[in-house]
Length: 290
Image (cartoon, rainbow, N blue to C red):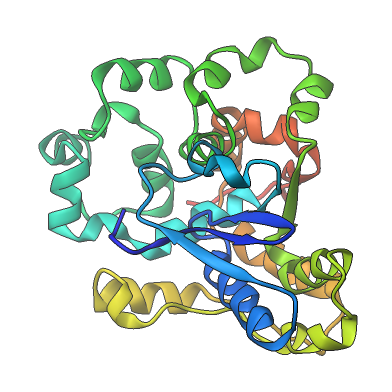
């Protein structure tokens, strides 16, 4: 993780955990903006921690509520695909067994979306994981987005991933009852609701509803190609449209990437996530891609 990257923001009422590719930059900047505008509300960045997620919350803040974003997992994969981190040779060599990947995907780093889903969810390609963790994740058929989510939200991620299939759904959801989730597709509204509950007057937060999603500057991305690909995948947020319409538009956007086989693959790999958030189960049109 780059030095200086924001891992969490601490306020008087909650700790916000920054989860990658889910609107974390927007929430971070809005929280800092509120702190600069509203007397009695403070927000500080914590960076350069050993880990990210709940494990890294300093003891003096552990009494505060934990808040993080919750993104539609299918949309999340699309965002990661368009980010194209693996096209940076330096980063690819640092995290992947590139020769092994190329043996399976001769055109690598060029990957179709379906190929990307299989590639990113195949743990033996990862050179930055121990053989033990690789084998456990692959044996359990754990999805990449599930790993990232559990890594951020559990004190002992591997223990959770080893046993969750045997835990009743209600009990699993109870483990997450203390975490407040902000929906990425309704991030402005959910953030305002959280801050109102923290005692800030709604009229002081109107600017949040008027702000669009924050896209990192080109220099913060891996390459011009990755930057352009990411921009092409964005759906501009229309704040004059009803919230339900924005959600429907985003859902249509990610669905265009998936075949029925892709949806089935992710539904299996990321079953932890769908057990926790059953409303995110996909409804496919029945069409398949070539």
